[in-house]
Every structure is written in structure tokens, then in C-alpha cells.
Image (cartoon, rainbow, N blue to C red; front, side, top):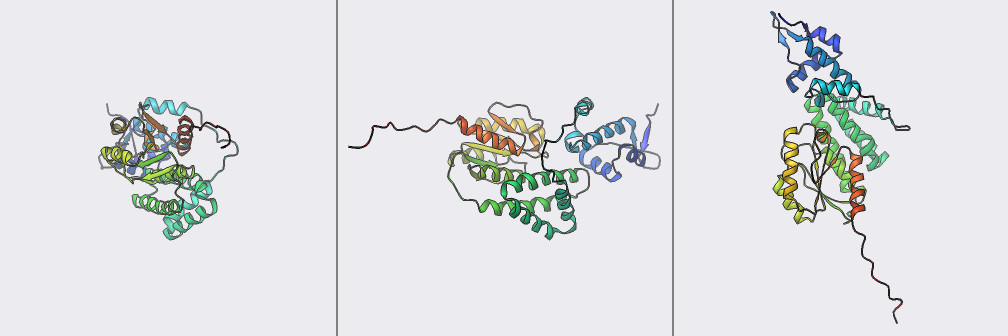
Amino acid sequence: MTSATLNISAVERETRLSKDVLRVWEKRYGFPLPGRDANGERCYPIEQVDRLRLIKRLMDQGLRPGALVSLPDAQLAELAQRPIAAPAAGAPSNTDLIDELLDTIKRSPADFAQALRHHLTRLGLERFVEEVAAPLTSAVGARWEDGGFDISDEHFFTETTLRVLRHALGMLPENGRTPRILLTTLPGETHGLGLAMAEALLALDGATCIALGTETPPSSIARAAREHGADIVALSFSAAFPRRQLAPSLRQLRQLLPATTALWAGGAGIAAVPATDGVTLLPSLGSGRLALAGWRGRQPAPRQLASHGPDR
């Protein structure tokens, strides 16, 4: 007996996912996987339509499709049963600003770069990262995943924002304070924007940041950590980094680093990573700052010289 199917127009009505999005996901994620009818048109099994409907419901709660399509049905159903978290009282809403910047990326690239510089000057580096760069990065990723942005739009956004951040970082004074944090990514992770945002906040909190850029081999990271006297090695992982490689890569690097050097891993890619001995997982920019405060709190207090009274 042949399973019931729906054509792409019917799936669009049932799921509220556009035809373009369905085609983009099919190519990008390998799901959905429609068959073809006698006329060569896409036809979707009912089971896939049910799954698409569930994914769309979770997307409406703020989850990203790239993190959802690979999950088993049982886990999707479990996520759908969780209560939706209410926004914190008094939390600022930047929705209009982020939407305006997203539109500017498409409409006028020159205006987008100017707008970023304006908001950086208006807000200062800390608030610019927290209120503009970070939420805008998530929004751009979501538009790319649902087919609203082309990969060229995502690349333009990343390079423009990196250029603005690097200029701002170059204006920060060198303080020479501890901890010394070496920041980089592993081979295969080309996204460096999250790394730059983390560097900005950690530097503003008084850390000495040593940026190696992206895609540094583990052996070179360990060598650089020793040469620079790094107290902490901080890695960034985007959602695009292969999940199967993440935990083994962290374990390998942990073995190569001196026992006294802390290893931090942050970014969207660590969401599904289990706890790993000797590795601090940082799911948000804010958690990086908390980890920095915790590191400082665990350091021994400086020795005080005994007082023998005034010289005579």
C-alpha cells in the first residue's frame, strides 16, 4: 500500500514553510526528502510533513532549524512540550534595530557598515557587542538557514562586522594583566566572529587576549600556549562545526596543554557537547565573563610582606 503524500504547495500551507525554504533545507540538510510523482513533482510523505510542522513550531519559539533537523522525533516532541521561557523583566528589546540592520545588509552594504560604526560609537564596545553584534549574528544565521539570506549575504555581514570589531579592539590599551587568554579555533572552524566578540568582552574585563585567528592545529595551539604563557586557551565553535569531531578534538587538545592551562570552549556549536573533563563549556558570551571572574576567584591571593614597623 502506497503511503499518503502531499505536494509542495500543500506542505507549504500545512507547515507555513515556504517552497523556497523547503527546497533550501532539502539541499542543505538532506531533509525533507520528498519523492517524485508521475509528473516529476515533489511529493512529501505525511510523516515528513508532521515532522516539518513540529520543527516550525519550535522555530517560532526561537530555535534554529540547523539544530533541529538532525534531532530524532522523540527529542523534537520533548522540546515542544517544554514551557516557553518568558523574557526577563526590563530586558531591552532590540527587535526593530536588528530587523532594520538585516534589511540594510540587502538594501545598501555601504549603509550597513556605516550603521555598525554609528551604533558602536553610540553604545560603546561592550553594549555594541551585547546588544547589536551578538543578536544580529544569530538573526543572520537564522535567515541563512531558512533561505532568506544567500551565503554571500552571510559572508558580507561577517567580514564587515569583523572589520568594525577589529578596529575597536585595536583601540583598546594593552594592560598586561592576568589571565593571559589565547583565542583561536580548530581546523575546520572558519567562523571567527564569535571569537572576536568574546575577545572584546574579555579584554574589557581586564584580561590580556592573544588572538591567533582561525583554524590553528592542536599541536600549534599547545606550542603557542607555552610560548605566550597562556593561563587559558579559549576556542570558538559555530553550529557548522562537525558535531562528531567536537568532543574528541577537545579531549585531544586537553591532553596536549599543560595541566595548569585552562581550556574553554564556547559558541553555538557546543550546545550538544557532553561535559568533558578539564574543559569549561561556555554556552553564551555572558558565561565567558562569569568564567573569567571564577578563574580570578580561584587564584591565590598575592603574598603580603611582613611589616616590621618603620625603618630606624
